[in-house]
Image (cartoon, rainbow, N blue to C red; front, side):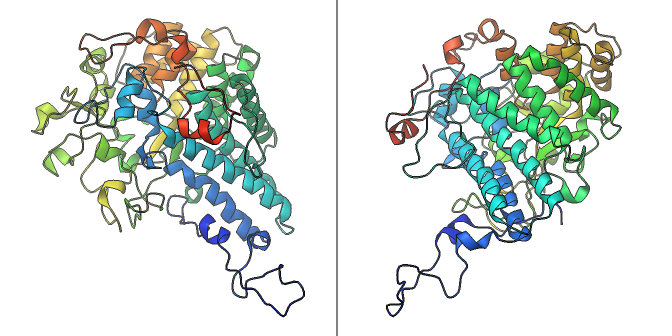
Length: 508
């Protein structure tokens, strides 16, 4: 049973709702035990049940695309604030919060609160693994070390999302008790906590460099390395660049990862967990159980339906219809060399391939990496819109190469050559010229390589280019310019209200 197929049986609601029956003849009538169910205090007393809590900690990874009453696909939520895709939909009122974010005018009452809730749900479940691990008495030492390392990396991943979107957030490694309030940490303090978790997990030296097929989707050493490099480079923490580069070169030299020769196959179903894939969030269409009434069930993703052309004839050109969000900008298509194999694998020219109903900000181009393909939501058991089996690619080997190239170009000492790393990615795209490993060339190669993968916006911020690049456009869609005060989204007003004065709002 693979991690993608694994349907965990842990239900927080069921465990919390223990049936209590009082016995008036008992002297300890307040000490009530269910005659038929195990209380949560006693449940996690075995290795198998502690493993259930670990599986539960992975579960919120799939909630971001649709959960908490919002569409929040992670790659799109950052990319709409950059310069490669538009928001689309039927108009500015359709997924209005996306449009506010794109124009840097999000407000506490109009912001993607679903990422906040799902992120903290992940943090809570990770903290529970640590708690239950300490309570269990029969977890083998090897599994204990491995599972704790996995949990530390998962927690760092959830906090990384919250940190990049909101910066100054509550940070805690033990779940809060009533009234569930804690001090707000600064962005730098949150970074320290994320790095501490990652360094502890890495130094434990128990994570495999690559997961077996049966464990695809679980945290690995390579995934921890990629997350470490991401947060260190985003923070511009030069004191840790040497470690980040060492980790990238360890991945490169491991022999367990490589570039897929044909870029166009990476995002197909047969391209999932290929030799280039370092980490993906698993979605499954076969027996997928996500529905509008139960969006947190195990199953597929709604992302392909969101970002495909509206009114497309199902099956035409191998694609299905969608709702017209996130059209690729015409300028994005134009930035590719005509011989770059990434162009057509990234930008599907739907306008040339068939007919559909053009929607707001339509360009004719859609993100081919994740568009709805015929049969990709087959054999689901609930709602087809929510059960496409497209895995979300988070880290790929090409990013390890480009991270290493950039760190070397910034003067970090390593064993490899920046030009070699950069041109491995460049040449894979069918381009025969050799690029000089300048920061500009490396960042442009990252842009070409990762359109629609949620990298561009953060790259512009961390390299201090956002203010120059993210400016009003010629179409009148983006009328505001990005400024440093827009680095963090406003904290959802519902969270400000619930915090009873312990949270200070970000500027907006």
